[in-house]
Length: 233
Length: 217
Image (cartoon, rainbow over all chains, first blue to last red; front, side):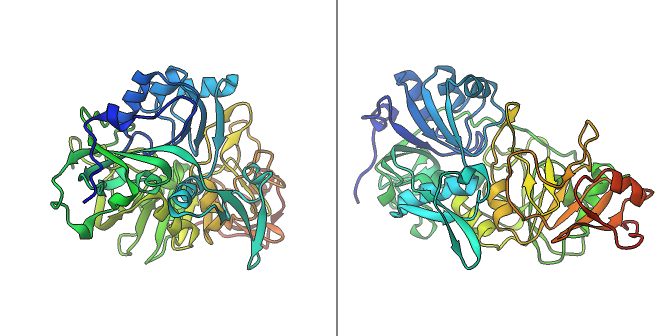
């Protein structure tokens, strides 16, 4: 067993500095690496490029980094629900690249899987495809999209072990598995770090080979963005 | 003239037994409430769930279980969870049978615009561009005109496009229309709505072949 366990979030983020490109898992506030984000806020590093489906809300998730003007550029598919984000984008303080959600996932996966680029039909004929190579396959047009290059991937899993094996819970899985191994260093924070050997190898979602550092996070808030319920009848 | 629930009820008739269906935010989400109960259908949410169920009862919400609109949900028996790349493999790979989404504009050649109003609203396309680029069966659910009364069924979209030549059917508060190579073909009228009313509210080319029947529910 190759041990990937580090003592805490500080050790997990060693080597992270301003100007770097980061992948951050999560969909809305679901499955975001809360501990890593808090630590980046404390480190006060700037000029970050963040690849993440969304940009959090004003006072949580990546919104915390936006408040402190730590992000230079966001690469996302959807950035609603965040007033500070919109303000920084419209004033030109923040550079924003909006790309289709499936393209975002596949550009992460391409980085993980060793593909330099992929062809996708998404965005053909729209401003997303402007300046990009296009090609016809079987009568349909596709856009060439390149793999991301990132310094760190920050992902959040439900359970993991010191070997770096990960299991995700429900829809908190989302982009997290696709970002594992997509950057020079992948840091996984887990709700529960279990003894090696206790996870069933048949049920591991991400094998430890894609993870360089793993630690058990603490104080997860797991904020719900839109609480919707039905009445018992 | 229909309200949003009426539009959802009419679209629910397009959902057939054995379909995997992706519902967009807004009117499309309502469609799930009106699908016939004697057929088997699974709803996909692009954040990574197939077999989506209704909202949870109060106190049973799970922060780790949401839909693409970030609302808390439940799952039904036989449901599965997966990562985002797998989710869009279902969509791009044409495994999802029906996509229902909203739009700001649709043109009579099937172009759709629904993600950006330059200088005013820029929230992003989310999964819409992937959905419209690949789905073979796309139904747009929207009001026929905007709040100012201008037609949303146009000759050419004025807003930045989400996809080109992809919309097959449009269901509005006034009509059901099929997008053909010649333009919008009127299939059905909403109860009590005249062909003339539909014609006046449609800026794009409208094909009227006889007296289109009223919608049935």
